[in-house]
View 1 (cartoon, one colour):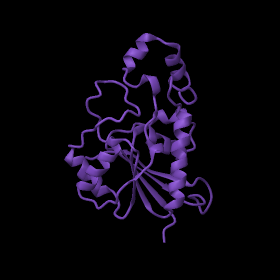
View 2 (view 1 turned 180 degrees about the vertical axis):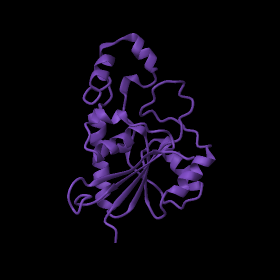
View 3 (view 1 turned 60 degrees about the vertical axis):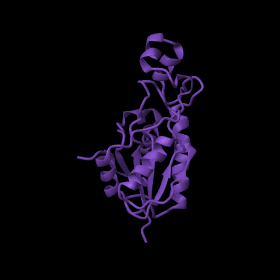
Length: 209
């Protein structure tokens, strides 16, 4: 029996009708009409996996579209703490508007995005903490299994930062496209004969074609 727990991360389909505005944890619809991408993901993912999504409909709808494209999938486990970063009062505004306004909280955030929160929102430290808690719990509960997680860019960046022991602010260096696949394995005890890090990054931001 395998002791490796294999995480297959997918960022949700593109959000529609956002008008170039920040949506963060707003519950926005997504466009799941890219049949080729859905079929590619269905073929790339393992059968018999545990499926998990955030509570936001763009993640839930994307998971359903992948399953409909040709892979048998169970009802996903809903984990609210796998949601996108809460950007608080900035949600519904445009980045250009915030930049042009020149408010101190905007400048402070970009000076230290790991520790500074948008007004009414959360910092990357907070995002990584909640995401890591879920990852560690589900890895223990489903040890040796495949876990398919259909979530968000910030969530997947947090998983990569956890696996590579990065400071939270460093996660923004990862490009995570819509409908991309990121694969990370957990190896109990470490990847080098029971020593070293327990995480192995297999694939980041893979896309069809």
